[in-house]
Length: 411
Image (cartoon, rainbow, N blue to C red):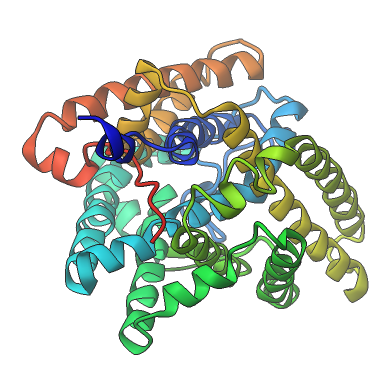
């Protein structure tokens, strides 16, 4: 194959960089969960399994070894990582809808998101949460655990909440497509940010603030809502929707041009994005510390400034990561390719390994950072190996996928 056909077969620079980003992002997710047991602000004792507000859902294992540096690392990730996930997930919605049509698109989303969500939540989450129960259990038996588990007013879903919320975003996108079949083309034209990046970023930042700040002021930035196995953070669903459709607009415009192009406003200005991310992160930390110092009685104006700083820091970190990846990660490598192919499966199974490894390390007298690193390395290896094995099975390959390269063609 040569000439135009060969050129079409080779992934473009942005496509290759974003495909590699799947590998880097999954490592960040695994590192984030590996560190949660060792945060310095956690209480001295584990959270009770049966008692509201069931804080063990966020911190399933509480270790006596702590390190403040892990708090900063996890705070930075919590700031932007899920918004980035929704942005990346939206990038290929419009090309996929145009190519496959609504029925095939929805069928594929249900298979890739709905089925894994149901299987992992039903089968893996009860096993993954058993060590959480064991920390405070009077009767450590499996039968006693299952009795306590069934008495919970919800079904723990762990990190799988992202799958159902992403599926909901896909359903909204297909509903809009039924009403306005050319919505993606319009959004793509609106997202052609190469000639006017400042206006694009200002508009996106404004929409993000409108989506997040009112909900954060009403509900607070932290509380979660859970019904059955479905959970989400009350302050963030509209923020995630903004990033999802922002990604859809960029994908409709074409990821090899405009914002993500070689002359775009990301790769060429990655040092500026890095400085902005660091500065806004420090601003958010400072304002959050002020809000916390009021012990729940912070004035409305102070809370609003803190919420606005969150929006700014989330925005800056998202595009900083994208800028650095576009500039530095447009490379091919065997391990990157393998990790990218297995990234989704690793996301599905990793929580089981994280919780059990953290529980196994409880009696080990090592510094917190060493424990976190050991949990992370073991989780990566176990998740990677498990996913590679699952992909050898017909059903596993169908759900987890073959890790195809992202299409770089503009719609």
